[in-house]
Length: 345
Image (cartoon, rainbow, N blue to C red; front, side):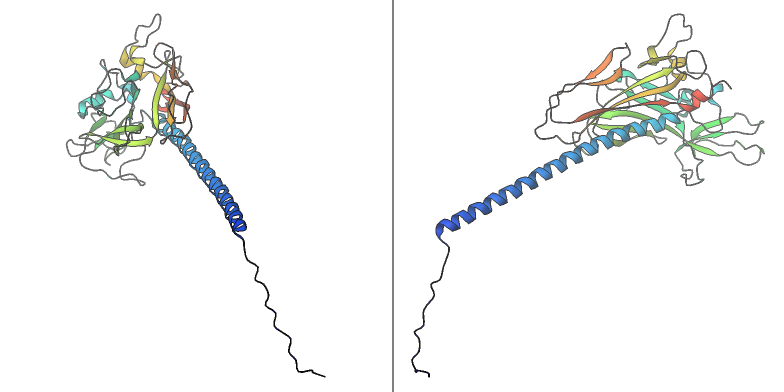
């Protein structure tokens, strides 16, 4: 039976966290947080370094590809056979905007300035001293206004080559709007095609065109009335070009020189600057690419070989003892147009 008595209520004791336990928990949490921050920081630094290296590799390869692609079609003048034009007695000025000078310079598909010696006057003041300058002359591989090629524009330089035997002269190289282009195709009725004439002057600039102190592969491009400066690839610190010279007319290089202007060999009777440059059939490119931004904790104590100078002595760059990563990229390029015209069947 129920006695009617109630049992007394017992309060349970609430268990809490002591100050020592709280301090231990906070310490462990801070250790875990510090470990996570360290992992994140290292991962971020590694990613940044990988991005710097990847960009440097991409820039170096792209710079070589740009110049190599241009060199492969150097001396391309469409239907006009430039081999019939004699080489100039005096090396032409690549800065000239005079069509008469363009015509004189046509046989010189390439022209260079070793270590910037007697460099063209049109190079801007930000051109890096003592660095090679490369000049490429050609026309566009597409006909103006055809198959996606830019239409003929007033003030631009064009080459028109005749395919009609009765046309005189057989080519016109001049500025659209400043001269007549009367030449015809084989039917001696249809106007002959026009191709835009190009002069590209490659050099190293000490800035990237935006005021930042980053060495940059830059190009002067002929527009007709002027040469326009176009920054191409950042981080390109040096270029050196060795030219393969065909001395016996078979289309193959017989000697290499970084300075064909002053090249000669025993018994040579026609080793003039003009002849030497018209005999260039290959080019050996050497490009030194540098990362755009420095790598923390890195010190560049390496040396880099960039081929040979005009005296046959290896060109050595470095050590720089700075925090930029570098690499050398090279390519051997056959200049198809002058070399192919000499090939024996």
